[in-house]
Length: 81
Image (tube, rainbow, N blue to C red; front, side, top):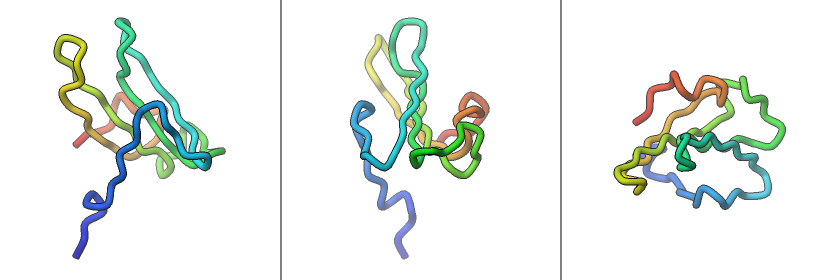
């Protein structure tokens, strides 16, 4: 049986399909800290709407991207895998 994570489609942080909205939070050095996608019109507080990516860097190079699901407003307290 296929797991949901087997069917993930990764998108460039800057490319968003027309039916989605995107939010981005930056670190103080200008690198992306979090990027989130949800259906257009979703509230940032909607715990069922957002797919959020957390980026890890070494020398300003992305070394890991972890994903969580929940409200954009809660992005810093979510668990990322």
